[in-house]
Length: 257
Image (cartoon, rainbow, N blue to C red; front, side):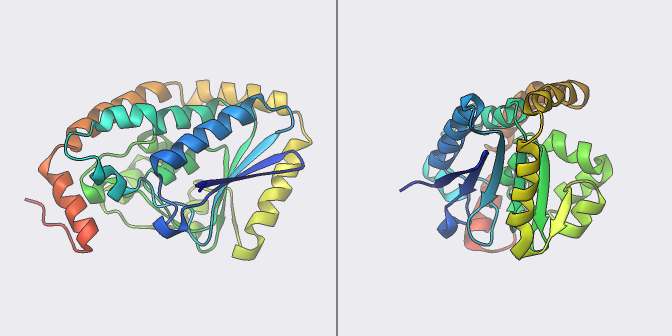
């Protein structure tokens, strides 16, 4: 059973994260399917824009914690990131076609990083954004440590990473984190209208523009991704992370010492 639904409408490829029973959390299967989809989209001349969204009422809950826990204590968080989110973030930034995130609901953790890697974000009024990582004793990864301060400022990034408080869709728009806020029922029509507009434009030039924006604003993206992987390897084997995950799975507040 596929965890990613793909649909080519005119010249727009719609990628829908589809693990609703797991709040569209990322599994290895879903990440692999996304990597394959972006690889194919990059070389497919029929695809002139990409839309990324979630099935149901949730965009994505980040990494599937239960899947990670099932790997046991010997898991290398660094190796995990080098195989999964790091290359996926680079694919989104390097594909020479516009990528729009249609954030239909809550968006947290690695899902936040993937949404922030997109060129534009349209959000439902019912969407909110939670950094998530510190809540289970981890450091931000999936380039959240770069994208979030760039978009909302370092002070706000510290506050909402440390407190794990949600950022509403309206506040996200005021701070430049999302481009537009839509009614839930108009989110996809408005996203597809924007995608159609971009698809009819000079997509080759858009690709070159992405290159220069990457150079101007995100020149250290690969270095940041590698640093995140190194620090996550440290954080992932500390007692704080073990307690954070236990509290998350037991639905209680963590007791950090």
